[in-house]
Length: 104
Image: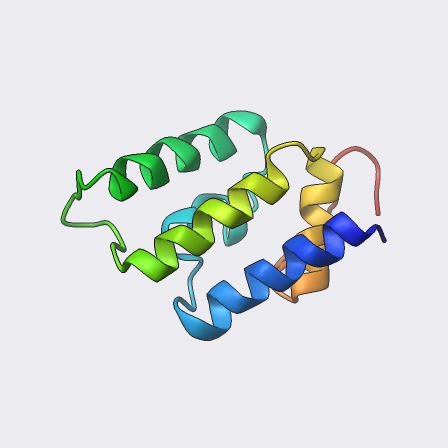
């Protein structure tokens, strides 16, 4: 397990412990394990929109939470799907045992 995975996992764990039991604005990636680049990009667009002040009624808009979500995205965007999955495992939030790209 790399330091980058461990660091990202610590951020994810903090999101769950301090702000949201369901992954907040990143739930499609963190809870639903949609680890593909297009899903991470969709989350990035939403977090960027929220931080700019354009808030939808369904958004989690607590600024410290959204800033943490932006940090998580900074950490996981350059990763492979496999590494993203390992982040979820290390954070203790992975719900499946199926890892993309051929296992842990």
